[in-house]
Length: 478
Ligand code: NAP
Image: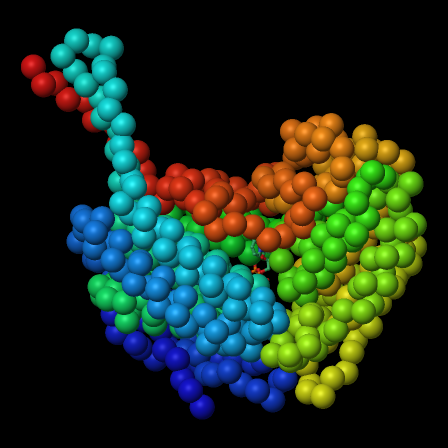
């Protein structure tokens, strides 16, 4: 069986243990054995990154462009192979997985260009003879902690800007799916990554997290994952004076009002709620529908949802892959049970058997819910959406905003008035009009408000807010 090691200071090294990466479509299929680092190895990786920062932070933009551009080219050339690995370890369908790998390649290409575009600003001083220059410098050593649901795109959208702006990195991917991140790091090594600039430590967050979070030689932490983990990491970072960026959960509303194009609204909700097995932080999990269109909408969406083909992620006909593991499947089934107990009516949501043993779940639509029910307050993170009937647009907007989260939100309407009002008044980092709440571009900022996010946005040129620090220089030329 293939064995995959940690990358510390340019060397591939064994860990203290290994973990088996299991295919959720077929638990007899072991993707590989992945080394698990211990805390001491993570601390060694931090020291390697600290050492490498001395030279990488002073490297020229051409060197950083070349590395990222070569990596982007390699990722795009290998996106089918990377997508296959991703589908095997995480369970999204092969086209979705190839799409994610391609996006990782595009992210590297974008940030290669960003290395060249990092400019500054010069302004006259209010004092005669002086001028003022504002420049951006790298922050230092960045610790990265990533979740299992986008195992190549999320590491890519953290690593690429960090390196582009001259930082060095220690990354800890999700223990459940380390394979795609390992492959990404391997591509960077092949592309000419200098020793220590990027270090990979795989293993449990509870074991190696403290070597990064609050550690004196780590200048900043970029975290994506659940609210509970994010908040505890954020508190430790604050206590240690570490810069921190947290991207966490969502309970994203999609508003459908009477004048919506029914087919467009149904397709946007089908995609937003159930594709990628609903395992997206931007999934449309609360469908808020006005009374005049409610029954038609629910009937059409329910019919289309029941026709979705659930199966092996690599199956040619599969539209919905498996849930990522037994623990997440239990969580999904528990929430479906809770929704029923709360008085919701559940269509679908049965555990399914397929030719291979995996974690297959029929998508579930819960109707007759109110916004106070747990199914509408808490993130399920599975192919489960609930419908809330409201009387009009005003109630829809108020319901959409009545949540502790604020990542992505959407509205389906043919009215410019409602679309414009919603864009302005929706309390979320991202607003979609007549488009699914999930599915975003790689060259623009990504992130949320309220309980979903903390700190500067990720992606696009806005990523520099986190990965650089501003210096103001006063120059007396006289
Ligand atoms: P999670 O359980 O919070 O884990 C995220 C990462 O944190 C994993 O690498 C995990 O390691 C690590 N971790 C756990 N405990 C830690 C500790 N004490 N110290 C340091 N690291 C620790 O989240 P998940 O289940 O992987 O991901 C699902 C969540 O991510 C959902 O809530 C989803 O909404 C959110 N998400 C948000 C975005 C966004 O951009 N807003 C994007 C994708 C996903 P282990 O692997 O060892 O547990």
